[in-house]
Length: 159
Image (cartoon, rainbow, N blue to C red; front, side, top):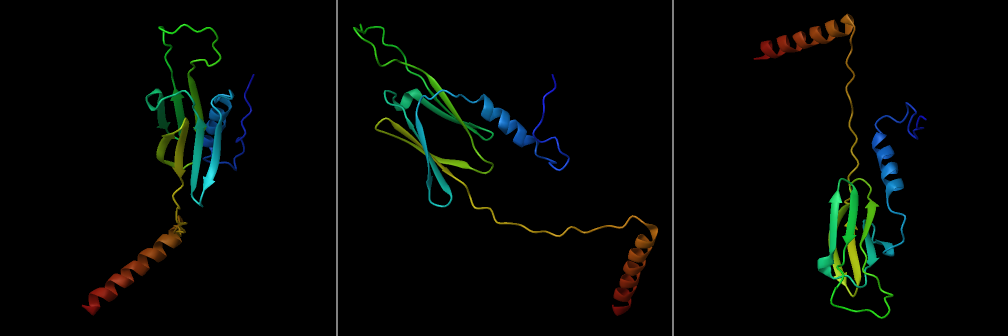
C-alpha cells in the first residue's frame, strides 16, 4: 500500500521537513502522564509546566534533539519497604514536544513537584533582498560586455 503524502503538490517545494514533523507528532506518546500546561509568557516566551510529584530533580532529564524537546523521568523501587496498599506507583515517563523552528529552551526550574521549562522565540528581522536576473542570449552578453568595455575605457582615459 502506498503512502499518501500531505505535501505531494509541486507547490510545496522544500516542505518535506514538515512531513517529518507530522510523523514525529503522530508517534509521540498519547499517554496522559505526567499532566502538563503550556502557557504564553509575553510576546516571545512560552512555559511548559509538568506535574512530576514524587520525582526529585535527580530523577528528571531534559534533552533537545533537532526540534524535539524530551523530558524523561525515572524512579527506582525501594526494596526495603513493605507496602500494605500501593496507590502511588513508581513509574517512568517520557514526554516529547515538537517545537517550531527557532524556539530555544532558555531555562528549567523545579519547584514543589512542578517542572517548569521556559522557552523563547527570538524575534527574527524580516529580510528582503533583490535577485539579479542574468541573460543567457548572446545579445544580452554582448550588450553587457560592450558596456563594461566602454566603462573601462572611460575610467582609463579619466586617469
